[in-house]
Image (cartoon, rainbow, N blue to C red):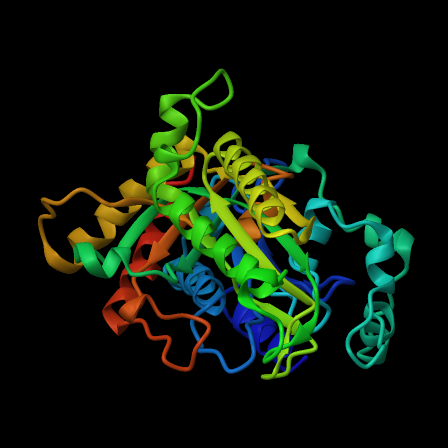
Amino acid sequence: MRAISLIRRWMEDAGLRTWVDQMGNVHGRVDGANANAEALLIGSHMDTVVDAGMFDGSLGIVSAISALKAMHVNGKLEKLKRPVEVIAFSDEEGVRFQTTFLGSGAIAGILPATTLEISDKRDVMIKDFLKENSIDITEESLLKLKYDPKSVWGYVEVHIEQGPVLEQVGFPLGVVKGIAGQTRLKVTVRGSQGHAGTVPMSMRQDPMAAAAEQIVVLESLCKHPEEYLSYDAHCSDSTVKSLSSSLVCTVGEISTWPSASNVIPGQVTYTVDIRAIDDLGREAVIYDLSKQIYQICDKRSVSCIIEHKHDAGAVICDSDLSSQLKSATYSALKKMEGDIQDEVPTLMSGAGHDAMAISHLTKVGMLFVRCRGGISHSPQEHVLDNDVWAAGLATLSFLENLS
C-alpha cells in the first residue's frame, strides 16, 4: 500500500492521470494527441521475492515514468500519437498466495473468478486481504478488470535480464526475442523401506538411488537433447537446434520419507522445472524424460508417478515492437557514447514476466537491462547507474517515435 501511494505520486508528477484498480494495480495514463486511438501499455511489477534486490520489476516502472516525466517537462506529453498507460502490476511473483501474475493476469482476463478464494499460509484469502486494505473486489468486478483487446495497441516491458548474457557480451541493453515456455513436474518414487544395516544391496528397492539416476539422466538429456530425441514430424532438426540453445532443466526440491540416516527411504519426491522457447521441443523432452524415468523404475523394481503441476506456452515477442526497441536502444547509446558499431543483442528470457500474461491480450515487446553477475532475487542484485540511464533513454526514444 505504501508503494501504491509512492508510485501514484511519481505518476502524477509526470503529468499522468492515476487510479488503482481492484487487484491493486496502479495505472497512470496520458491520452496524447488522439484519445480514441489504441493505447500503448508499458510497465512491470512492483513486488519482488523475499530477501531480494531493488531492481527486479521496479526498474521497468521507474524507466517508464521517468521517460514520460521527461516528455512532460519538455511539453511533449500531449503530442504523443496515441494514449500511453503505465501499469505497476501488484503481484507478479506469487510469493504470498503461490499464484503468479495476479496483477497482469487480471488485466489480460486470464484469472478465473475462483482466484479470489486462494489463501496464504495463514488462511487469509486474496479477497479478504484486499478488503482489509480498502480494496473491495467481487468475482464480477474481477472479470470486469479485463481490457478490451480492441482498445490496446501493444505492451512493452523493461526488465533486468536476471542472467549473465549481456554482461558477458559487454552490452547494457538487449532485445528479447521470446519468453520460454515452462513445465513443472512432480515425480514420486516409491520403493521398499528398510533398515540401512540389514538389507543387502542386491535385494534393495531403493527409491533414492532410482531418483538419483533419474536426475542424472535429466541433466544429460537437457545438456545434449540431440543424443536422446528421435527425429520425426513433431521433432525436426530445427526444433532440436532450438533446444540446444534454449533448453534448461532444474530439480529444485527433493524430499524423502522417513528421512532418517539409518533408514532406506520408502518414498522420494522431487520437482522438475523444464523451460524452452520451442513448445514442441519441450513436449518432446518431457515425453522422452517420462519414458526414461519409467524405465529406471522398472529396472530397479520401484514405482513412479509423474504429475504435471504447471504448463505455460512460450511467448514470441512481436517483431515490429522488437525492431522499434532495437532502434530506441541504438538512439540511447548514441547519445551516451557516440557511434555504436556493435549489434544490439537479441536474447531469450528463461524467466517468466508480466509480458507472458499480457500476451493473451495484445502483442508484446521486452527490453532487457544488464545486471551484475546475472544475479537476481538476491540482495546482491545490482544494475550500474549508466545502464539505468541507458534504459531510461531507450524508453524515451521509443515513446518519442511511437507510431
